[in-house]
Length: 177
Image: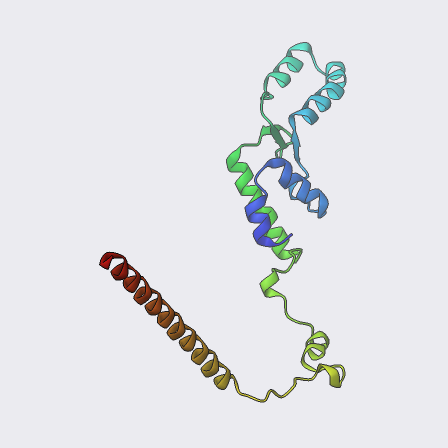
């Protein structure tokens, strides 16, 4: 993926998370979706209930915002909602990570020809591929074509005039009768 493709095409949390997983980028390691949150809470609640009073458990669960698509662990281990501002901030972080790790594909216009390939293009392989000397120059070809076009134009005008003259003569013969 090129840098421009990343900037233009990665527009959702899933795309950003998938990109990071694909490139072993740890920037998004602490981010997870609502399905993971549900699974995590299902696993942890039993353990929390053993080690907390019911009021502490209630308060801990009450602190967790639900109904969002994406979440992350903050620096204190608390679950926070990931919003659009977070997305743009972390997308910039991933972009910087990609720059630092030189992971971007080269843009097509940035590709430099391979010297060996360029030599093959410049040098004919055998005598059959060599340019054949033409018996006339490009200038002579253009003048010749221009002359042919002019002659064709004059011929068309002459034929049109003859046709008009024939029509006028036909009409005048018809009116004389």
